[in-house]
Length: 148
Image 1 (cartoon, rainbow, N blue to C red):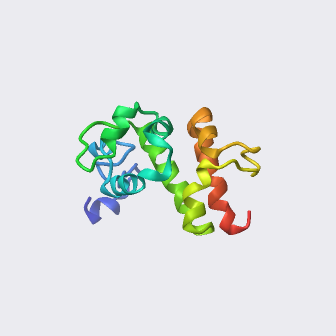
Image 2 (image 1 turned 90 degrees about the horizontal axis):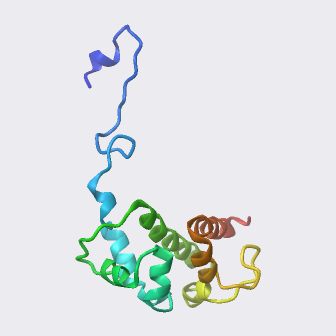
């Protein structure tokens, strides 16, 4: 857009958005894992008890999950699955800020007396209660270092 167009006398709507913006188009990158997410998923394989648990969190079949973990994965992942994959990464990032590595790596698998868990294992509750609950757990953990 030219400067002269911004200074025009007539009021109007100017969209200064990238053509690849989510509001205007669906970019191809939504259908593939980013390199950073691929690295986090493939380097943290032991964070869950088997492919079944991780696949259930991502709402994928175990076979699709095994494929998605590969660095050269070319399959499609929908937006819901991308959010489901990002939630555990945020959860582990928060846990690593609050606890030492050994506790952070096992926390999701252990019974928890926190207000969201009532003695249950966070991973089981996140699988049973789906994405909104996963995001609640992430927000809960992000608030811990802030004293909330």
